[in-house]
Length: 185
Image (cartoon, rainbow, N blue to C red; front, top):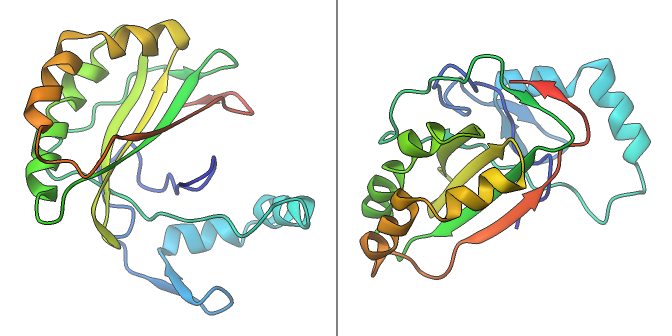
């Protein structure tokens, strides 16, 4: 399961694909990076962070180059949304049964619009990872714990369960986390 800080946010806000800009080789890691992520990884503050974390991590961070769901409604960022110390974020991985990913993605994409309209929702987006074809990912940011709890009890969340029956390989894997620094979305 991915850890905090493992997702590239390149492309957020324009509805684009994180990996669609073409790969840039990173021979030291044996993989390709998008040009935006490659440029970010060569900035002074990124290198400084790498030096500060050297020897403090259990392993190399897992990187997911996510693409926004083709079935999600157009992205409309909440103006003035701010991540603060009370913000609750979530990274949710949902594995579809083999061959059922597109059906599951269509069903899950119906959550994006209503969830983004909920009070306290700062961001609620559905993504895919081309390297893991049966996996779907929600990246969420909520004003506080009360907002995420209300989301869990919402009518659209309750209605989703029956729609997903037979499509998923197991229960969603939810990883909640708090931001380390405030940021404006």
